[in-house]
Image: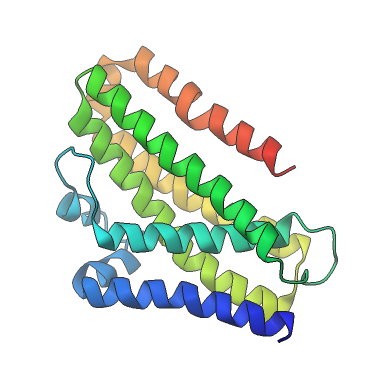
Length: 210
């Protein structure tokens, strides 16, 4: 089996997660595809604060982690072409990303419960995860194009980073506008939140992969 066959199996596994998610909740899946231009998605599907399992979110979460880990294996490779498929490297990135996002979410929920704004924090996290799930869909397409058509290049890397930064910023400002009165009331805690849960973890993650 060539490394292209191995990548094909990886992409098939990622696509299978999306297929199962679509079968589980086809209407919500179609609405997710319109997330950028469909501002009421988070209002429709938001849930009360609780730590539970929704299989639709779980499937999309693992698809995002798998696609992101694959993309990182391309970006961090020193080769000018598509790197040989490595289960070890992919598994390593997969678990780093899984622990990062899972633990980060639990800590955010815990802090929200302590300061008694758990519903707002839960809704904020829900919107952020929806943006990441949407990025996971795009990452699958980008990974496929990278392997079979374009190969690794600085242009593709920076274009992808710019696109995802734009998506996440749109989600962030949408959330900021929605909770602007709460943020105005708790502006100091909001600054601490950005420093502790957004900026610092990204810096640490950047150091790990560099």
